[in-house]
Image (cartoon, rainbow, N blue to C red; front, top):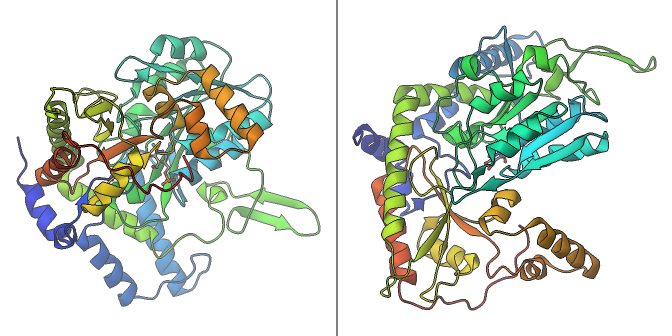
Amino acid sequence: MVDARFDAVRRDEYGYLDEDGLVYLDHTGAGLPARRQLRAHADRIAAHCHGNPHSEHPASVASTVLVERARRAVLDFFHASPDEYAAVFTANATGACRLVGEAYPFRRGTRLVLPIDNHNSVNGVREYARARGARIRYVGVSGPDLRVDEAALDRELGQRRGLFAYPAQSNFTGVRHPLEWIARAQERGWDVLLDAAAFAPTNVLDLAAARPEFVAVSWYKVFGYPTGVGCLLARRDALARLRRPWFAGGTIEAVSAQGGWHRMASDESAYEDGTLNFLSIPDVEEGLAWIDTLGMAAIHDHVEQLTARLLAGLARLRHRTGEPLVRVYGPTTSDRRGSTVALNILDAAGDVVDERVVARDSAGAGLCLRTGCFCNPGAGEAAFSIGRRTLRGAVLRTAASGGTLDDYLTRLGLPSGGAVRVSLGLSSNTADVDAFLDFVTRTYGDRAPDARDLAPRLRC
Ligand SMILES: Cc1ncc(COP(=O)(O)O)c(C=O)c1O
């Protein structure tokens, strides 16, 4: 059932989209701010003085009070008890992953297990593991839905322990990976880092039920504003097992410059380096209040309906010959998936239209979407069916010859460097979905794509 409230929300809170004639289809890149959030920010900082939270004076205390209120709101949002979980403010989800990676007790004999469907901000944790002699094991995805091979995952989790890191929702295919894996891994002695960056904007995450050791989120993905603020939610028992490789202002209880000694703070501040973003962190409370006003369950249903409309529309898109106009990577129904849809456009001969052509044409038409591999190389490799041996050969030969990214992609035999990603969120509406379907039909249906003047690719 369509929730008419979202039409009013679009008009009143996200009116800048239609006023600017933009079709915003990059919610996995960033959510959008409601106008009320921006007003609340301006009103708050214009009305009172807020100082650096590390002091006792009134302006400082004013900041501390708001930061601690935001911290409490974050825990409440995830149904996490403050006795069990700490909410550490970070710059983003990447910062949260790095905190875990750099301080996790990896050593020889421990393992890091990752599905290949992971964002680079989680893949990067492997470099900390590798540096400390831990083994890194990737688990593949299979089938047309590109879901993780559960038998292979079980085999890996049956081995020596360590850290299991996975996304609750793929930022490439939109696949929702089961939260049940958390308990399954923990029963076998693993710690779990759950990357909730793509999941949290449209799903309820109940930490009292799921209980992962670590969770990474970026708030701008959930409600658009503020940017530069994320969280590491960490179970206090797991946090106590981490060992930070350094200290900084704000993270210590005591330190001696000449004595070469320091004691870390005993709470979450041990993980908050330097001065917090104290003018923006209170906006997290505003954002969470806005999500609560709408209700996460309602947001979930709204976005799920739009995704179903998009998927059904894509399945109907055909060339006059009857050949499909798009190829979707990942699930083509709403079953266990979110609102991120990766695809390529196909020409009448069935060949992939270079995603740079689509990036250029869609931008020209006022559509905001993402192209490339979305910092998720593993999902991309699986989507394009590129095997490990081919990858290794292409990496080695490109490195040896000092080749470009385009050389690398050519060695992989890819006609196009990546996919096109359309992602929906709480401010999306049916007109956005229809505008994309219409754009694809008008621009590529029975027409040879214009591939002139494309710039070389600079990054994956
Ligand atoms: C699944 C996932 N994890 C992690 C990240 C990293 O988020 P950020 O760049 O905000 O740190 C993203 C960003 O797109 C993501 O989609």
